Length: 405
Image (cartoon, rainbow, N blue to C red):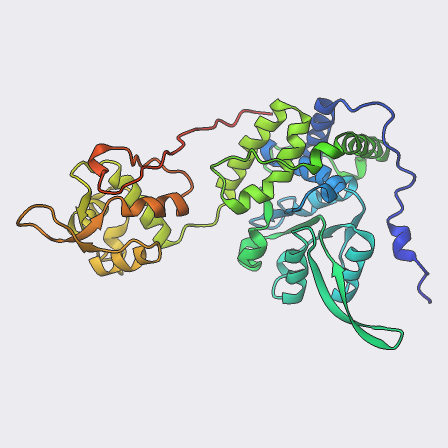
């Protein structure tokens, strides 16, 4: 059987979809998207909000410089990841599921048709395939491309295939199967298996007319706010890391156009989801965080001897540094080795005319706290930590509650 010419192009026929004739009721649009998602999938309010905004992003991604991955991540089978991906497929712009596609066809598909890429079973389909992972990672940022040599008029020429665009990946324990560089480019949607008290409907009951109505309203919203969206959004939560801010910026820009209430809820959702899906801390980072805690109560001047710092870490009831060394306490050498990567090194400190033990200058920790810990409670303005040339840096202590949507 011969392949049908331009068959792929016909796959992306939108069926004559037109933007709705009236300006969109933005509260109703967001509410209807979240309601539809939660009708078919067991998912938190915050995650449903993030998915709804990402669906709108699939219609407006060309207005932004970055398009984060949507990472639908389940700890086990039967947690609804495939169901959610199918709901997303119904609503996004130009959906394309990548079952049984070659790498060469994939990046040509993205470059020529600009679809929303949907990859199920990403823990097996993507894992270990470096070139495919490269396409996924390159597609995160506007201008991302892959280069291949093509035969054009009997001449071998280097050609760039642009792969920027929306991509959703669903899988089990993606953090164990995908590189950190891929996971860090995405907004994770944590999935949970439903209980006997959770009630969802079968996807076959979904109303095609309701889907078309939602898509028409999304299209009108994007058209009406295209200029505002193209300006991006730079008022990003300081509690998020740089890459997390990059990921959430387009969703926050969309939420801001929806209204202040939706923007506030999106900030809260971003913080909650990032906390829930953050990778485990390294031992060195946990040590740095614990040192920040013990130094917050240290009142004996600008220096702390190594022995004193170790004693505070070892005696703390909620810390396990007394078992760090194969069941034994952390040594001064291990302490120094863990801190060296952060630029914090021991020195001879003068505690008094007769006491000059090895230790640390309290202010030396501040730069590491600022750079490597998510939210600083350490107070550098405290007079007992002041020293020559010490420049205090103010810290945010803002807290956020997570109200129901």
